[in-house]
Image (tube, rainbow, N blue to C red; front, top):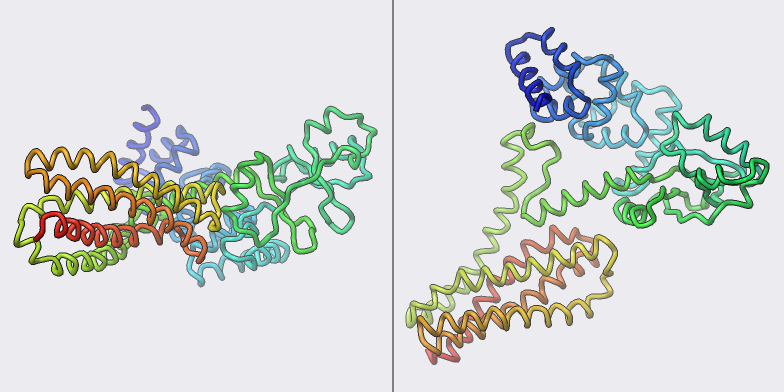
Length: 445
């Protein structure tokens, strides 16, 4: 509570241009609280907050910001501040920032680097945008198989300040070929005179052009850093557990956004413009609105059926809503199973059969309830129509909803993007066709 109150006092002081008081108040906030303060305000005011921090503290805050917010913040800083911050970033953080800023700004940032840093940054920029090569850390500890435990521990001490992790040491040959891996614990428990080649274990590695999200899943499963190698199995960098968590969090946020028929916000909500928020939603709304025209066409085809029994119209929202929800539930379940590598596109046959049975069971349960309620109010024939339609609709919706993410993955499309509009359109239209077909057959209209 005290921190939140201080943040409010900082915001008030900034609004009234009392910068000296704002600087004093900022010293009592933690870096995390300062980050929260910057994320809730405009980029101009965020730049003012940032310049009121001390140099070391400013760097700590900058590193905690997301790459999009870093890019926004740079717009309000002077060139010398920008150059200093950019040069101190780790290469992987630097590359993520470059992906967020306009090309002209990226070119100006790259011009501030020395030759070695520029070469490293260009190397990482050369890898595909979603590859692990863009996300890996280049700072790691290596040793030779003929080195002793004592020599390796000394090397760990030398690299401790700069390395992304010191808890895992990678064993390489003289050409940087990956041979194995050691844990810091195994080094401490071993005879100092023993050669590490006798202690090393086989290493699970990933190619530098591998998908970052898939590598993150691998890293999370193993709970240890993944060495990243080139086509000749030479060690280039490492993918740490922290890297994996960040990639998976970003992927989850993207999937949740697209499952909700919108594009993900790349900035914190309060610092995102109204125009950007509207733009992130309007495309999907247009897609879904256009797809809804198919539903209108179905209703027009069965217009005469509706005229003969107006009560049929009362159940349309129930049936289309149930179909859409059933399909979305199946799609969400399968999308997650794909994300955690529980399923592959080749499993589509198993998934179809399984979801068909799940949908039939759901349809039987919901159809029984619908049959009972509709029969009490509108008579037995109407109850049969509703119960039968729910059985068919749930079965088909669950089957299609389970298949769509697998088809999307097979054609290299994001399952969350592909599934939502298709399931909404398909289930609405198909549900209505089934409904009116069953109604005409049962009610003889």
